[in-house]
Length: 116
Length: 114
Image (cartoon, rainbow over all chains, first blue to last red; front, side):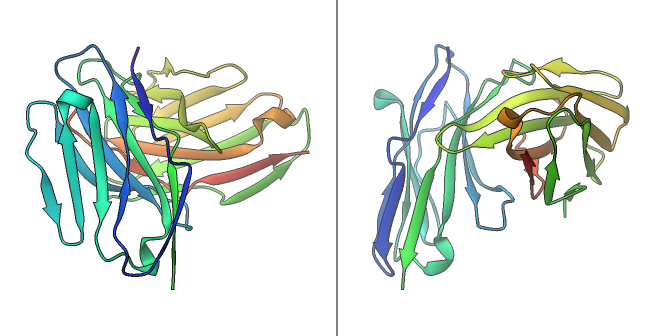
């Protein structure tokens, strides 16, 4: 069965600190996709990044970076120089491309609070 | 921009009432989804639809039904609301088939059943 674990329930940092959100996944599939979503206080989940299982190259987008390691089944998300606007709940998700509907498995989320 | 709208942001109902949650997307997406979000549990899929009049059960369909009469609209129905259905309900849509396409989410409906 597929599973996504986000062991950090809540994290608090002070503005400008770096923070890493952990995501560990389980799947028997060799082809899969990993996603990160941000849910700000307004409630609407916002797509951040997608990564397929064949592309282990790390990605950087501004202050955001993602570290995908198949060997440890992890897809961690780092925010550099955090800002108050980064405060949100962050979800990691796993998707099997061949399984309609049952294919998005979300982790429980990590609530990040960035204090001024 | 993709837009997914939900009929209500907050809803309060009484036990036993029939509840309708409406979701509309404006990007001609084939797939639509209903999730509920509870603290510590993340998002759990209730139902999804990959075409008009088609529906498939997700992980937790008990106590819910859905309707998709038009491509842009996907309704979630609680036939007889119960207090354990108090939750945040999120609608999402995505394009076509395959795992690559991200889901676009609405703002959510926070339902309280008294």
